Length: 198
Image (cartoon, rainbow, N blue to C red; front, side, top):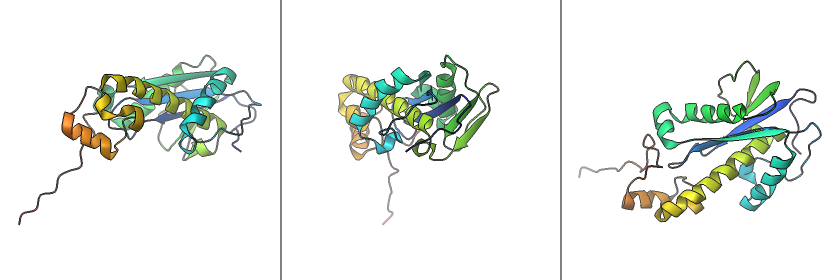
């Protein structure tokens, strides 16, 4: 069972999804849950089925004190790099909160201060603390939905299935059809070809 980081401070959890993708945005969520919030299903979004994530999403949105979700798109990722884009997305999501948190807990090991609010980075925090797990679910479901919409424009990449991640099928489609405006140009889209001098 996941827990809260604090029992008395208003804490916001934040996490991102889509950092390792070849296409589409990096998406972050931030959420403040009520002090007495409990949910037996809630966990790191990577450990939940897609069905469970989408079942949890309205529960979290309805029961949250406040939440925010933000995308940072490929063009920006290429300009500022994926780490800075991930932190920017988390800052944008935190900026949408209607209640100011007293403390921010962040999944991972890198973050930049948001306003003057103290924060702590927690490696694998989405498997330890409720608010980070909740943020991971909101970020993942929002991004997946966005990629399913993009799939309608470019069905040959099968983004409704691979969500922009570097699957063999996605790389083959890039090889065949080239890059779209949604691909991250700063990422290595295809594995380097080895040439043998025989």
